[in-house]
Structure formats: C-alpha cells, structure tokens
Picture (cartoon, rainbow, N blue to C red):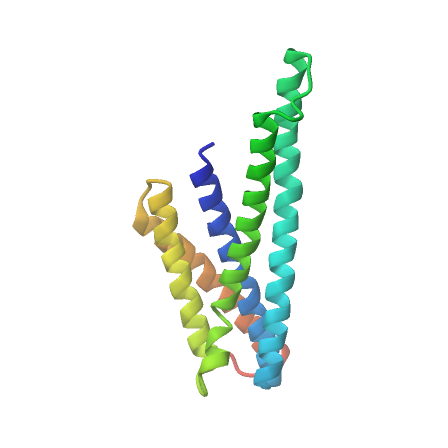
Length: 180
C-alpha cells in the first residue's frame, strides 16, 4: 500500500480517536466545574492515548511487516537482516507508529484549547471545535482516498457528533442534570 495513504489513514484514525476520547474526558470532568482539573484530566488522557496508540501501532504494524519479511525470506532461503528491505521495514514501522501517536496527541489538544484560552462557554466551544475538526478530517479523508469529500465530511462529523451527544447525555443523566 502507498505509504502516503497508509500514514494518512493513521492521521485520520489517530486524530478521530484523540478528539473524541479527550472530548469524553472533558465532558466527564466538566461535572466538577474546576477548569484546572478539566485541563489536567484531559492532558493526562491525551498523553496516555498518544502513547498507547503509538505503542499499539508499533506492535500491530511490526507484526504485519515482519510477517511479510519472513514470507520473503522463505523462498530466498536466506535472512533479510542487514538489507535495504529490512532497514526500510524498520523505518516504515517507526514512522507509522510516530504518525499514529502524534496524530492522537494533536487531535487530543483540539477540545482542550477552549479551556486554556476562554473564560466562558468553554464546553460548548470545545464541542463545536471538535466537530469542526472532525469535518476537516472528513475533507482530508475524502481527498486522500479520492472519494466523495462531502460524504466523508458528513460521515466523520456526523459520527463524531453522535458520539459526543451520547457522552453528553449519559453524563447529564448520571449527574441528575436536565439534558437541555
């Protein structure tokens, strides 16, 4: 597969998961109302998610790539250690892992920003910013895959919006607050 497309998919997935996971942390932490608590909880979630996605990508991608290498080695009746193929494989695994972790972290920062820079309406702006970022990811996804951009935009923003709404409603119900 084309490395640009593969890394593009990691950017999309990492950002999508980063935005929505940290938005969930923020909605849950917002129950307590303390801005520094919300920021710290969200940043903790962002770092943990980025490291977990980086490590998870490394484990899964290296298993896939080293399986390909071993399949190449069998008919050749030789090891591919110390070859350009092996070095390229290691490089691609590392790049893939860093892209996934980096995208997760950068995506995670988006819902946090209003809590750092604004004094009021932080949660509402955070949710709006997250859905906007998801829409932009949808545009990127459509362009990257050379598919219908509008469909990708609607799918990405729509799914994200539904997930955020479900989290918001569940926390409002749990805390005994009205949904509206």
